Amino acid sequence: GNETWVKLKPQRYAHRGYHDKPTIPENSMPAFRRAIEHGWGAELDVHLLRDGTLAVFHDSDLKRCANVEGQIEDLDLEGLRKLRLEGTDEQVPLFDDVLALFEGKQPLIIELKTAKGNHRALAEAVCKRLDSYTGDFCIESFDPLVKAACVLRERTFLEAEYKAVLTDAQLTGLSSARIATKAEAWRRRRVRKRAREAHTPPMPGFRSTRVADRRRMYP
Image (cartoon, rainbow, N blue to C red):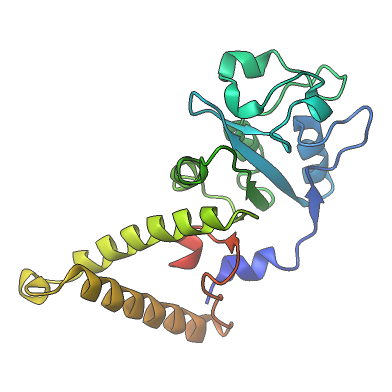
């Protein structure tokens, strides 16, 4: 069971923030603040820049929203700071800035936008940042390779957590494949136990490209 999933489902979300063009651009800090003011969560899009910066922007192509040529993945933080959104004075938000704005207030739907085969690096960077985030959120992507990268990361964490509760004697003779199988069974037992305690149905497993983070999937 998952209390956060119960909170996320009935919530209203402003897609790319509560924008109001041409004065309030999509995926801008004013749009996100406006969503919070109305008591809504927000959906946003995250890209990984060449220097590892995480930026909130919808398209890989910069033309529509920033009126310049090129792809956002080819920029570094310095180049990103030069952009302005849709003819306004608003800059492209950093992922960290949006998280700080929403933490402790409203939930987020975080879509990972891949480009040039960066699915694994993007998933790792986003999940690593979210490990210390205390707000409510879920992760989604239309790229199935993001799902695969998240699953791989979560399995690594799960197996480490499972091995931590075993004694050396219990670990002796267990192959990696066997540990993975037993760790998954252990996770499912924990989920069912939480579901019974909370009287809510278990959260579904990784069956779509929409992916929940480790703390949500493995409560």
